[in-house]
Image 1 (tube, rainbow, N blue to C red):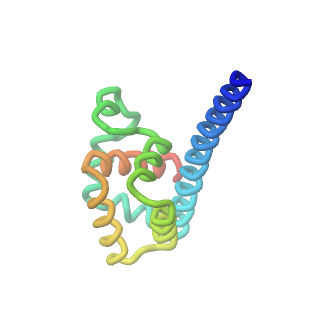
Image 2 (image 1 turned 120 degrees about the horizontal axis):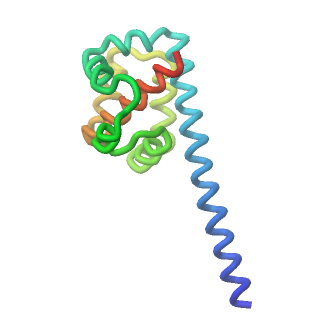
Image 3 (image 1 turned 30 degrees about the vertical axis):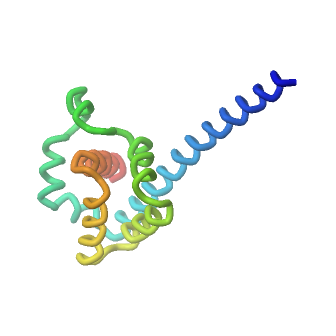
Length: 141
């Protein structure tokens, strides 16, 4: 009897873990797609690539990341970035940010989002997110 109960707990735990990871991957892909489609429609990607900070990162991380560059970043995949973002923002905050980004933003909106991100993320985390975003832009456009 106890063995069946333990087996049930293990199975429920494994199912919960797999469901959690699937949901994170799905939400990460959905948010990325939503922002990318909005940027394509508005032509924001080209404007973003003209930003001096983005240009600097694009030059620093041009092409495939080396092992040394990967070690210097706290994370290097969309899924890892999503986990960090979910630990520092609520789901509704993230969807608000994604919808603002995909709907086009004024300079004031951009400044508010930048201030919010800088208040909750470390400089290394921001850099890693920007590197992942640059990689997505390169692959998506």
